[in-house]
Image (tube, rainbow, N blue to C red; front, top):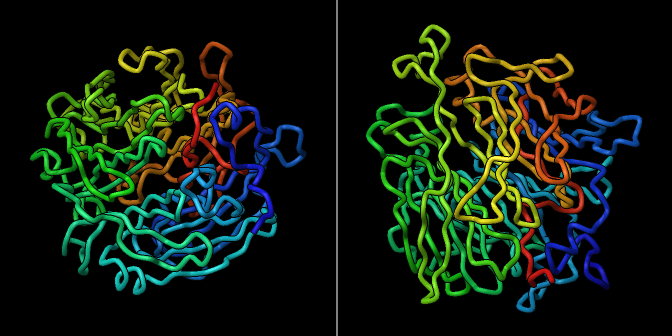
Length: 466
């Protein structure tokens, strides 16, 4: 434990933006067929380095079949909350759950080039202490590590609803379930919060039988995937309101509140509208009376395509849906990045007015039926997927794998893992860096990214910027 707060903790978004630029990134390596263990890659992102754009260290796990998906830090800027008893922790450990195995790894990255396994939590402990399975999103909070799950109990994860459990941020012991009153919440995916205003927002994907073996077309067309967002009284651990975005808005995934805690709004990305194949962004906000509203503020249209150029799943539609699979918000709350995994496009929107997003930049890379190569001429499998923004907002990184079985359904002829980066113009706009292109070892796909010293997707700030 430090005698002073970790210098990578920042009380406000503005202070975080002024911190030194990242030099390393941590990226998940997924073995889609389980023939080899998953891993963590340490990538050099320092343009002054001779190994820029190269994997400089790997941590390969001892087990197969984990299916790494999301991961996060043991501690972050929320440790500076006045309510925190852990302000002197180090941002030292990465918590990596196996979404298929329900096993959790704690990786010590104090010396990133010698990163190593610190602790392994076996699935039996997760089941016994929480009744949940399929751990998914890791979020460091002021009093511990919050872990969302996609499955309940039982072999198929449908014995009771999924939810959130909390881990001790020093011992990594599992403490128990978060929810005291979940209301009508019966599915789960992402979550995030506003610490000073004491509320949390969560979203929905689907239950394990709806995603583990690929998308279930019948369930999608019957609107049986998640389409609600839930608002919680954070400290009371109580669901206070649920908003149904409309059953046709299938798979309400990423939740991105404004980073400045004085702003009472945020965004949610919806994968597909079953009435027209559009992707969409909803803006939610809190009213003066403390209740919440949500409105669709952005739509992205599908692209017509000949059936013979499409995977079997889409041939009957004769179109490529955008498939909005990830979104991320810059620390100044100015630009929202939207990954259109199906189209093979990364969009940048100016959301200075959160109710009227404006397209300010777009990059085409990969994509169903297009397979647009990188500017260096090398291939990019699948499409833009997991997004990570540098603290100063000048660089946007992304990888390409969604989920192994879904990759194979939508991109049956693709294979490979890549990570790329685009530079951001002063007034918006995106341009791929020709010199930054990471190709992962054969047999591995790439998934989520976390930046050295923290990043926009994990830190929750305690004070407004001035």
